[in-house]
Structures are given as structure tokens and as C-alpha cells.
Amino acid sequence: MKVVILAGGLGTRLSEETHAIPKPMIEVGGRPIIWHIMKHYAHHGYNEFVVPVGYRGDVVKRFFLDYYTVNSDFSVSLNDGSVTVKERPVEDWTVHIAATGLNTNTGGRLGRVREDLDATFMVTYGDGVSDVDINEILSFHNEHGRLVTMLAVRPPARFGELDFTEGPEVRLVEKPQLGAGWINGGFMVMEPEALDAIEGDDSSLEVDVLEKLSAAGQVCAMRHEGFWQCMDTARDLRLLRELWDSGHAPWKSWT
Image (tube, rainbow, N blue to C red; front, side, top):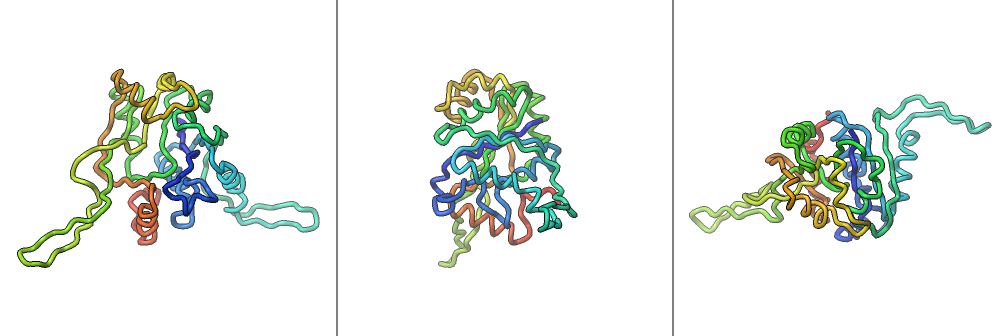
């Protein structure tokens, strides 16, 4: 089953990082966030990826073109340029990269790669991680028979809470999630027929496609109470890096 990772946006809210690279290539723990997402899917048995790129797509292409060499130990003959690889990377992935236009919207990017999506497929964004079991989403999708299944998550709290005692002292309590409200966590399973709702490059996956399918009763959601974190802002990025550096990144399920 193929996994589409949307990787073409401008990432304007992280402009201090994305002025030279696309957001999915921002590093956490020395690896691009898109690599972390792929490792998550591959851990659950899904290792064929379709990556629609736009802004600075050349950076994404170069990363995967060079991946085998950069992550291998090898010997090179300076006499004739021949290379002997000694140690190879462990990732057994197939990555299809498609240039889908600089200004194409999220739904439009899916439409541009439609010919590669002739069976049930998965979709996610190139900037969010979770500890969800991917196979649970697929099972939920198959059980409920809708064209789209999304992962519903509680958005992370922007601020900690102040826990008042009987006196003037307070205790700062960092809340990992808000107490109410659900949002689309971006981990989705789709049937090819869902792509019929895409009208062109300007189609938004969220506003045009999913809202239209939802109104037709073709969208369901699986609730996830576990870890989920997007990378929209510098604060989000700092949090992900701190979690990784702590050695207890909740999304690192492949160890």
C-alpha cells in the first residue's frame, strides 16, 4: 500500500528555517522530519512512498538521490572513479517523487499523482509525527467502509496551566493536550474514488475535498488519545528537538 506524504508547501510560519529548504526537510535529531514520518510507516510495514513536491523540491530530490551513497560506507578509486559499497543503509524503501507545481494546493497535489493511486492508499503531511499504530487506522477504515478515514487528535496545548495552591504559590503544569476538541491529525486512509472530489490545482484537501466528502457521509475518524505533534511553528520545532534529544521521543516506534 502506497503512502503519500505531502511535501510541497512554503512553510511560511517557519520562515527562519524554510527560506532555503522545504519544511519536510527541517531536521530533528540530524534527520529531516520526513525521514521520521517514513520510519514510522515503514515500522508498521508500509515502505512505498509517493512524495508530491513543490517549493524547493530539488532539496527533497537530492536527499533521496544521495541517500544510498551518503548513508553507506564505501571505497572509491581515484584512478577510474569506481565505487565499492561496504555497508548499505537499512531502509528498504521505494520513494516516488513527483514535481507538482510551486503554487498547487494540497488537494491539487494529490490530483497530480492520481495515476499512482489506483488502490487504497494512505496520506499524511510532511510535518507531523505521532505514536499511532498505522495498522489500527487501516483496520478502522476497512471496518467502516467510507472513502476517507482520518485520525482525530486533540491539539497540543500552546501554554502550560497554573495550578493554584491555597496560598500565593502556583505550580506550572505543562499539558501535553487540551481537554476538549478534536482536529484532523493528518494520518489518513483513502480510496481512489475520493480523488474525484478534486477539481484542479487550486483544490484544498481540507476545505474542498474533505468537506465535500464529509457532507456526503464519506468521511469517518478514529480517535487517538496518544502522542501527536505537528511542526507549524518554531516552538513546535524546539519541542520536537527537545523530545528527540531526551532519548524518549514518543513517535520513535522503530527501536
